[in-house]
Image (cartoon, rainbow, N blue to C red; front, side, top):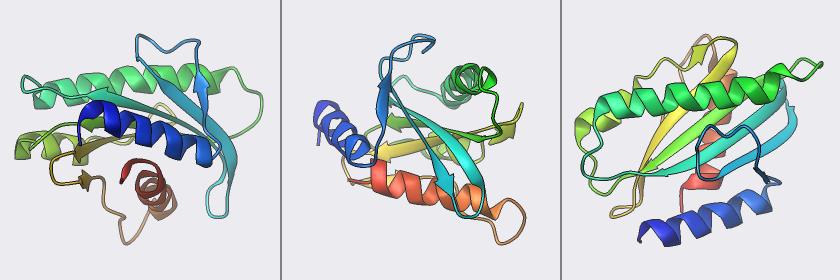
Length: 157
């Protein structure tokens, strides 16, 4: 599956699950989607997601830099709200045959920072494998469980 087909499928999945496009304060990210809802274990959530077309020049520092930049977008969209919500962000990199160092950079990225939670995810369109953060056995399980569910329903095609 090429990047364009993957993007179209992700957009369709997002629509099915109530995600709406965001056009303001996207910090240069091509397409950003947002949804606000209630989660049984973590309460009110605002979820922003974007898809990045990875290329052969992508390195682990690019994963971190891009996730950090998306954290700024997430913070901008949550900071102006009066209510208390848990902000979750997903940056999905579509990378054919990703180098293990890229997967490690994404899966070891510090998720929680500045009252936001950003999960970089690597999708390999050649094999259909989605590399995401594992759900821990103890503390913080709710946010990681939500990440696992969201990535499966939105990005695993």
